[in-house]
Image (cartoon, rainbow, N blue to C red; front, side, top):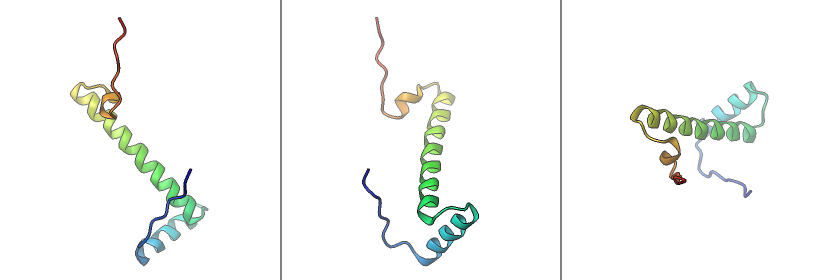
Length: 70
């Protein structure tokens, strides 16, 4: 997989990332990776919850349509 570069992060954000990384005994890169994974998974879970509340299919909320088998 290609590396991800995030240019122009301000000093406060970088310092916060460094502090979080230190608290979790990770490198800043590993901390950023963990934050991204957790956020993206959370978005998927929120989509699933919303779909279940309105009676939709969670796979449809992600753009994957089920085909019925006859």
